[in-house]
Length: 326
Image 1 (cartoon, rainbow, N blue to C red):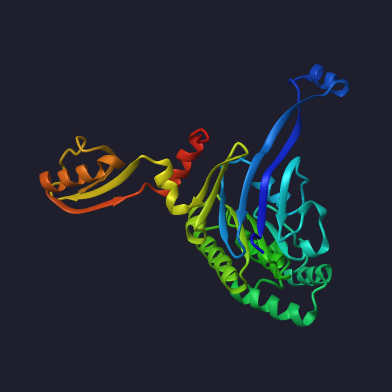
Image 2 (cartoon, rainbow, N blue to C red; image 1 turned 90 degrees about the horizontal axis):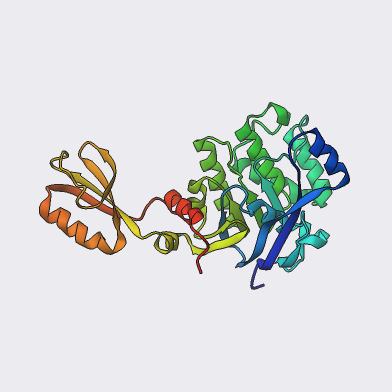
């Protein structure tokens, strides 16, 4: 199979009711409803290879979750084509559902009043997993996420981080080949985010699973994804390697310089974006980087100097702020 996920000119349009505030407008809407057409996803195309981990980035309302729901079969597309592992998601075929999973950080699938272990047994029955396959898989996932002490507690008694871990286990008991992860670390502390990231990376390596990940935490993307797809207003702005994002969308580099005399004024060399004692951070045009660096070394008492691309968070913010490239 050439592609685990294939998307071609995929569209999703919603008719959203709208009305003015007030009782009169409310009464009128009962007789004549006015709607506005909203293009949640607007003719996007991409392919994901088997075993690839891809970041799917965009601001709130960009179309990320709508796309994942179409790819997992929860929403029927308005137009275009999509296949996952050779299946058309909207058909919801049993073999397709056994091979994919959708994890949403703000949704629960486990029974609230039961221990996670009981919900896992329910999932085993739903997916018809033979017990000789189910038990080793369950125990392996429990060990990987270090939740031996909490899977016997009712889910409602777990913290957010604990609940997210047992939810992920429940989503992977049938060993899916494609993982659609929608904000899997949302609301978690830094330690828990790191644990989830390590788990996803380990699962990908062990089972060759394909992963499409959305996250507002750039640490998730940098740790897991070499390739990113950036979507805004339902359209793709960028699809390529994460390392190429800065070179494509930014015309500046960052120079961090430590000076023998920290009081020196470096405004003539570039835009000063940060100063902490003897350390100054400058923002300079890419084409001027070499010249500015040479000037600093020749004219200032430099103790240390680093030239870097801007932080990935700043690059993503800049991408969102720009119109779609021609």
